[in-house]
Structures are given as structure tokens and as C-alpha cells.
Image 1: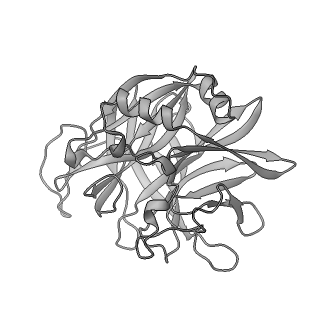
Image 2 (image 1 turned 90 degrees about the vertical axis):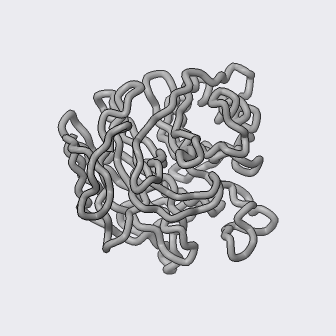
Image 3 (image 1 turned 120 degrees about the vertical axis):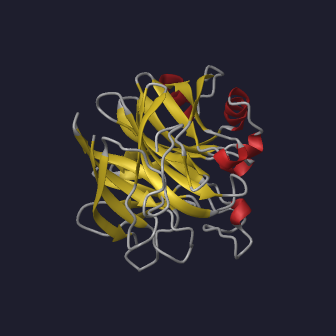
Length: 325
């Protein structure tokens, strides 16, 4: 629903205000490697070369899907205490790098993908810059703990409450989105970074010029008393942004909770101008955590979305979304 809107519950008990946007799921697929291993906890996606790089928040590697074949594993980070995957059951969840953001960028005239940790612990404060070298992904990693502390300060947050889950290029800025926890009084928010300085930092050139500016907060409304919080954002050609959001009843920014609904929000400038529900899939909420624009104009957009099913043994869903703007 629109921020601040009120209304009567529909047949499903949710509150949604009348809206001009329409969203349709036109295709879905399970994401697996050739050996059948599931692509776990898909949290972000971005175009890399002629394919799509799908990032899992509980693994040290990503899946690079290209035309004509199965996905290739791309190592992003070295094993952590001997582990490459992490989960609650094995007691390793606290070790995970939690890469939640994938943003297509340009560095030295070359296209690249910037991956960013969510924050809240030192292990989650790293950036990975992925570039192609002779058609092979090459990864450079940079510790960005000082920047994360600056982001927390700019948003008035305890560093333990950071949960940065999306970013997109807006003009000459990299806009970085904090998911927040609305039920605990922590709204979704964003900060801007100078794009050129951010790219220099991602390549390891930390010269102190990267500054946090323009903090903003966003009210996407709530569903059944649980606030909608931003999980990823993409930019449209006309300047508007599209954000996916989830109403997740979590106790804190690190632990999963029940997801009662998901939505797509349109952001124009500093304002949330429209919020619409995402369709369920097979009777279950489609928890979208990563978005990529496949095609867009002033009237419609086609998005590729990846989901986190919150089960390490189950392959993530990917969906194609057709949005009438």
C-alpha cells in the first residue's frame, strides 16, 4: 500500500490501496548447478558479460548463468574457517559474508559488477568487484569497515543494526539501500556515495575521498501489522526506481522471520509513489531479494528476480516479472 494509506482488508486479509502499476509473473525456474546442487539463498543478481551473476548470501561463491549451458561457480571469497556455505543448523551462520547487493557499474571504461556485504559484523563489511579478464571472472576484494561505520552514523543507527541490501546508480551517485526493520522503528533508508570515489575504493584505492551523503528514509506501509522493508532496488530509464520489499516479522536484522507479503514499490526522487503486491507463486509468498532490469521503457518493464527461500537445502526460485508502469 502507499505510505500512510488506510483501507479495508481484501479477501486475503491484506491492505493494498488502488494503484496504477500492475505486476505479472510470466515465468519461474529453480536455480541449480549442473550437478543438481541448489543455488542457495539467492540474494542479488546482475548482468555479467552475456550472462547473469546470481549471488547467494550464505556462500563464498556465486552462480554465473550464461546462454547455452549450466551455471559456473565463481569464487568470490576464500573459505571462512574452512567453510564455503553457512547455515543455522551447522552453527556457521555467524561466519557468512552475507553479500546482499549486486550492482552493475563501470570501472576504467569496463563493465563490472559490484557486490557489497550487508554490514552488522566485520565479516559482512567487504566489497567484491567482479570484472571479466579474457572472458573469465576476476574478483578484487576490499575491506570497507570504516565506510560502514560512516553509513551507520549517517542514518543514526547502531552498526549492529545495519542491513544494506541493494544499490543502484543514480546519476553520478551510487545509492545504497538499508533494509531496516520497520517493526522495531528502523525504517528502510538510503545514502548516496560519489560514484567515481566508490569505484576507486572498490578497486582498492582507498584515499579517504569516499563520503556518505544525502541520507533518506522510506515508508512503504505495512501488511498485517508488519512493515514492508526494501530488499533490492533497480533504476528505470526515466529516473524512477523500482524496489522489491518484504513484510518479514524478524526479531533483528540478522535472523529470518515469517514473510507475510512482498511488494514492488516505485520511488520518484525522495518519495514512494506506488506500492503493489507481488503475486504469490504456488500459493506461497515470492520473497524477492534481487532484481535486474531485462528491458524497460516509459510504460513497462521486464525484470528478472531471484528469491531467498530461507532453506539451505532448497534451490532458490528465479522469476520473470512484467510490470506495467
